[in-house]
Length: 390
Image 1: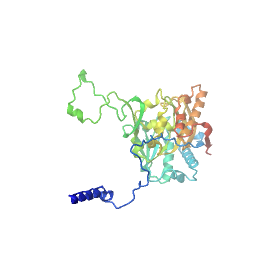
Image 2: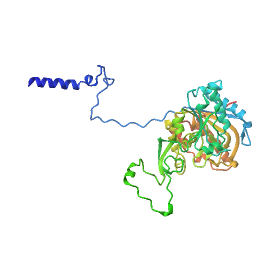
Image 3: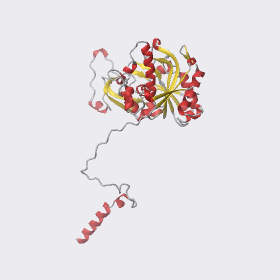
């Protein structure tokens, strides 16, 4: 009897020994020096993340050439020089190749996010994109590793963008959204064709009642059909989440009827989402949905530079555009701070609108100040320096 008890104790000791049970050599546990925590101890909830500190001052670089645009037609050679000068000034590099090389690597898949709204007259100009592409190629990026994209294939082609074997690949987001990259908002929106979760309603043939669905078939359905096409979810473009590793954001200098400004923040968020109308229409006007979306690392972490196309500026009537409110401005801007860039654009748009006796766009574009509170950049004009590139 005594022998049986001793054997039992030995077996229990071997099984409970962590070294023997895991087949590992005797090593100190990494957490062996940590203070023990009582099972009854209450763990304090995590504090909300603190916004990233905004620099004391932001710089926006500007290059203006009146001869760069005439009768809505850009001068490609002059635009190329403007883009080259701008990127060298922004990066502080002495050559075009080293300037772009400081932003991207030859191994990157570089996405150039254009804005084709208002095509063909009021969209990002192909001449600006061709100049960027030429600079990237000088920096060693293969043309096959350069992607130009926006929401709709049709508008991209109306704007004059075409895939080029010696230049770039053309992609679009419509019908190509990432089901796993979801951005939610408390406001539901009506889905339309092209949105990821849009469900086509079957035709009502002769007013017949729908056939009952067998129980077994109903069980096989992976998700319910949203026949009302209402959703509080938006999905990011697959181009942004999967196709590209770095992004050069090229918005236009334009107002927007719903949210006041179609600038750098707008172009990287609303133009990359499906079910987007709910995010910019009344009563929110993009606030706080635009800053919230840009603060998402899946959006902001890939952006290395913002270049705003102001060859033609549109101070009212966007996104469709109206020549009565267009200015041959012949100007390009660049900055690494999208909020500062948008603030400078909004100031100029308000000046033109004041001259035309139109209500200021800043009255609607409240989301810029919210973007500052999110730590996305400077919205205070007193903290933004505009540097003219000669």
